[in-house]
Image (tube, rainbow, N blue to C red):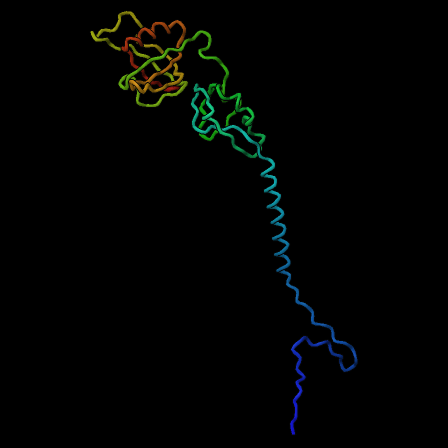
Length: 225
């Protein structure tokens, strides 16, 4: 005789059973975790603050002009000297807007602007060179006649009369002429340094005559002189 064994096991969830008094048992309560709730709220708040900061940082920026390389006082500003950068708007700063790019190119620097520095209205000047009552004289100097230090617009110099081939200096003539450097360049053919200097109108003719002889030397003086 064969007997069969019936399995009453049920792998699924067991339904709520009636208690002995006929009342249904409630389902088990989920355990709350206050620490996780607080952490979730903090993360959400931080995300909102970060988003607000990012939005503010991108909407309050302005495009302005900055120096790509150092611009020295007295130099002509070229397109290669300038770059457009974006900065956060700050009432304490008054940089030139990027829209002034075409107006600035061709003007002269009124003061030194370091590489990366912002340009302002005071950084440039439209004053013509030479100004009234002054003249610009170009002097070609060998390496032995000019300091090895770089010279820039606005530097104070003295053009000194040196002895000629006979060893004499013209008697009764001034031994030097005070001047201000406008700019410098290198003559690649001769290796000489061309220094354009600003001098009073009355001294220009004498200085040009001296420079033509080659019997001059240039001394770079302190700006505090």
